[in-house]
Amino acid sequence: MNDFSFWVILSNLLLATRWTVLLSLVAFVCGGAVGLALLFARVSKIRWLDTATRAYIEFFQGTPLLMQLFLFFFGVALLGIEVSPWLAASLALTFWTSAFLAEIWRGCVESLPKGQWEAAETLALSYIEQMRYVILPQALRIAIPPTVGFSVQVIKGTALASIIGFVDLTKAGTMLNNATFRPFLVYSLVALIYFALCYPLSWYAHRLERQFNVAR
Amino acid sequence: MSLVSIKDVRKSFGSVEVLKGVSIEVGRGDVVAIIGKSGSGKSTLLRCINGLETYDAGCISVDGIDVGKTRGNLRDLRRNVGMVFQQFNLFPHLTAAENVMLAPKVVNRESAHITKALAKETLAKVGLSDKADSYPSQLSGGQQQRVAIARALAMRPNVLLCDEITSALDPELVSEVLRVVERLASDGMTLILVTHEMRFARDVGTKLVFMHQGKVHEEGPPKPLFASPGTPELAQFIGMQH
Figure (spheres, each protein chain N blue to C red):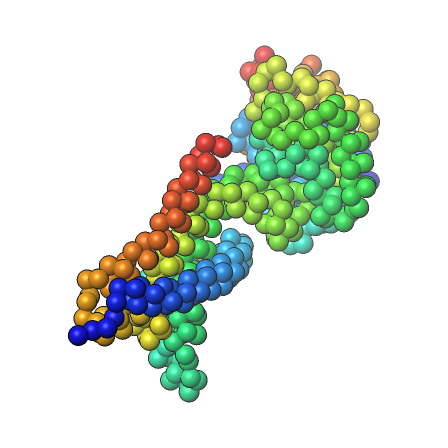
């Protein structure tokens, strides 16, 4: 019959989980960096920069992540450049993440009183200095819970990368199912592993949120 | 020569003209009190002097530096013009001393040694030497406002703008802030205050400006003006206050 024992299935899934975790980390770290740049552009008072950023954010928030993965995977290939699933997934998830983080953070920045900007401006601080010394340190505190919360979305989002052939947890599950014909067992394990990755993060995000509300 | 020169300044918010050609000259060491009803344009005028608000026509200069009509590079101007706000606007994540030291450190690139000395000196000047390590949330309104004054003074401005700095304070805290401002005035600091404290305007001010419907309605030395207002509007306004 089949020689795939439970432990073989599980260990293979866990090995593939490494790639899910790595892709999530890349998307989150790079997306965070791009998101920060977007945030600066978004809250600057330079009209065209704000408009351009808003268009970028609307695009990545307003189209399915799956379409974005296809665009990066097949679209770039049309230009004659070979794109590996790994690179296409990293790029698509980075841009997607950056669009959402930029908007989450903008909300945090804009929740600060206008007087904070004015006081910093009056003290002759430049825009970058106002952000660096006055606005971001305060916004950061408010931003941590929703940011940690969003990291859960990123992890779940990486599952779509399996469709363009990236061997992550979901893809490994599909492959194991094809070999074992035990879909319920395989996908239950896949779901459990995702849950084990995500739950601690959402629990932590809730805890941070409570702490923040108490501190206020 | 005037330190602050405001010539025929006009400003509209949409279709509402809030400043309809305002001219004021402020000399070195002057203490100018701007009074008037809310909506008379006094706060807007003050905010135009350091470029927090743009204006549409006329010209403003401070110590020979032109405050352009557009939000240009105002760094040099703002180093010379301090401002204290009604809502204090202290940075809540920094201690009193750190609030004071931020701009000297970041903008003037002073050494830690000098900024520490500055914090000590300016906090002493406002009577808060013992609160250097307190966060704004641990201070009373009056103390917060005095830290805000120290923060502005740390940049060694040529002129200090005060925008209704006692209006958000509990009545019993007003006098400690006014005493600090009075001491600054007697030290020769040039001050432009938008205020509702009539007695303070009369006793400490060297010049009174009464704004009415976006214009300077009356101006002159405070004591004679308070004693015998030249226009019914000022008379009514002063009467209202008592």
